[in-house]
Length: 160
Image (cartoon, rainbow, N blue to C red; front, side, top):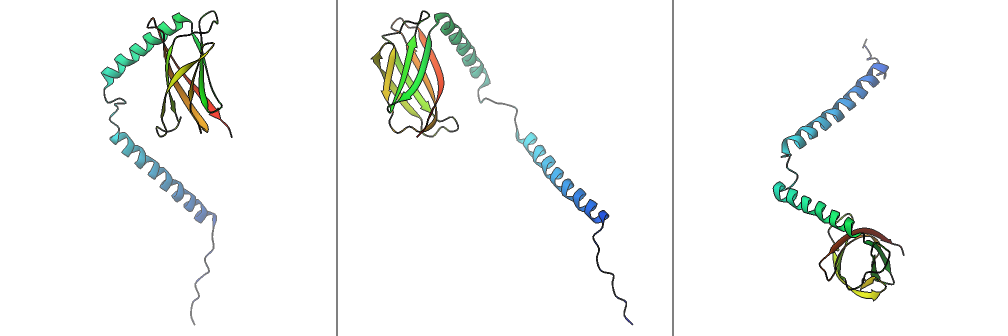
């Protein structure tokens, strides 16, 4: 006579053990990656923190000076051109500015386009930019003949 082995039966204890093993493996991997990330991070965000701090202070001063000017700017893309419109505190168009701009993709540095905008009348400045599609950040700098500087950054989205 031979003794037959009992067939395998999946019980609640087996399921509990599987669930515990699965979560132990996932949590163990998460802890391991967190430890590796913590050990490899130097804590330094900028390569040159002192210079970055000075530059940040200059940026704050620039923004205060711009706020005192009271200028406003609008950005749009129409007919394969970037158009920036500047107005003073009273809403009058600003003429005689030297305007430069960069078009940058929000998620990548690829595809950066530098523009030099030309006066188009009524405080508007225009530069050709054919074939733009999708989202772009327009970073512009306007300098008045008197030396006053105004910087803007606007996001424009172009649909087909």
